[in-house]
Length: 320
Image (cartoon, rainbow, N blue to C red; front, side):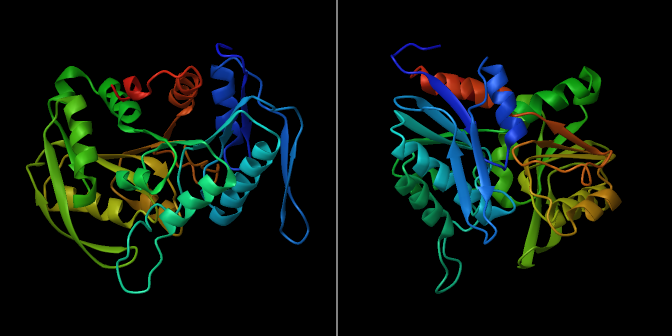
């Protein structure tokens, strides 16, 4: 793989060690030697156990819960590699935290997604590799190149193989809100299925009220498509709406990021959703792995993206 005079090295902090190990395995590489610990006062200590001088370094770290610890681990690791004279540093962030704070909704609010982008650049990253940002425009917050992978090319084939040809004729892809329409449309195109939309009105943070269904879902197998599931309120309400108001026969759901905070697991357990498919951009503990939750690995697509970046090849074929 060494084509331009420097080697490639994959390192991980504490958020995604298993996913990072899978990426390295797909590339036929050992995981880089590093240790990220916390001192008794909570400060983070990073130790890089091998030379990275002139190397193409990829640091794998989702900024998921605990968000601030994982973000600081990423920043400190990037700084360590920069000071160790790494040739190029790519922050591989399968899940980019703070992405929902991408604009000012009311007066005197921060735009935290922009702040995080600035911090990653200032720490010394040369580029960012991520998946399904909450708003694609966040790519513009960075002053360094961003390769933005999509979850749909991984999720859609799963449902395509799960249902037979006759069953696929009864599928309808549903966006749980207006913000996910573009994502759901791409998903529907891959399955050659019609699209419907749940129109909801959000009253306050993490609380939503479903109003009506735009499109025909009566007696259909519905697949709800979203970028992330946090407290699962939107997803569960949408599932109930397509079943009760729309007359759907069955409800399935999928999302790229399973944040699963607060009452999410209880809501999903008690919901009418038959199966929820998530990608492992965020590690899901065994206490949250319900029988109806299926996890798919992002390691193969990230590994191919890393190889393409290293070889200076386009990443766009991965969107096909």
